[in-house]
Image 1 (cartoon, helix red, strand yellow):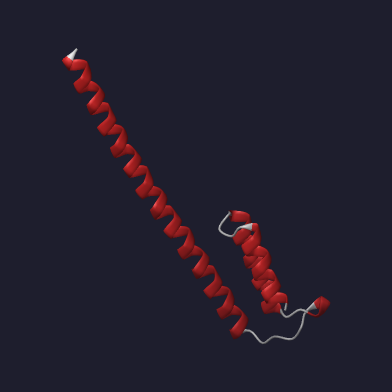
Image 2 (tube, rainbow, N blue to C red):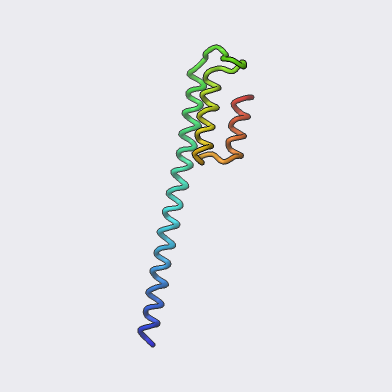
Length: 94
């Protein structure tokens, strides 16, 4: 019976270690996503600032269209949530 108790304790410790590893991996993934969001926003802002091209069809500048495309790519890839995408789009469109 004693051996069984030791096995249970060992199993619990292994489970705790696995849970800790999973939490760390989740934390790292969340940090990477936040970093990608910030990098995408910085790149979009840089493109918007750098380009002062004439308005394209529909009255939008090339930079605005490029920014909207980049936002759409970030949204499609899952980097931006629906709410974040809508807010960023409203900000770009005025």
